[in-house]
Image 1: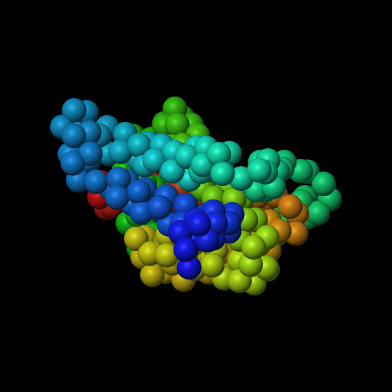
Image 2: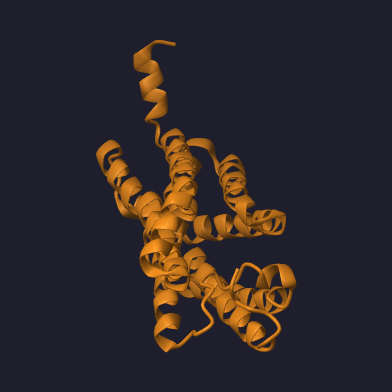
Length: 244
């Protein structure tokens, strides 16, 4: 294979987006809990506020690597619009059906899972004890922005590009494998749970032609998980500290 052919193969959109997703995840995980960054934040702002700002910075890395940089690369290398990568906001009957079906399921799942000790050891991610309305808003906004980029990566540009190049099930297999690997740092339970959820969200996104359902459902999952975690932690005041 000559260099021209190799370059052509790499810049096929499905192949390119797989490389982009791999780079994005490696860059994100290299930075999101980097000891030097965490130490600098804690030294500057103190243990409690430093940990909070570290979480916001993690969300920023996600927006940058999962959303902004891929959009820039795709605009330079592919002759397609955002809608070709799932950026299509639809509220038709099919979309509403999936939202009404999946959203309550996510709430039920988090209501059950957040009662467990291993879940409460990780969530809420911000480990402050003095949560108020302003902190709830800041954290929720961080989740929404982060998940917008995150779901556009998994159920947007990665999925739709791979689908056009590989077909349905190979694209879903690649997508779900990467999605499960992205959850490994949070433990085997989340990595395994990501597999059926990932398959389901891929199918819904391809059926609706948009990553909107996946984004909204993931926001419901993240926020209900955070709020239920706070609720169950509050039942153990004096017995369990929110400090890691």
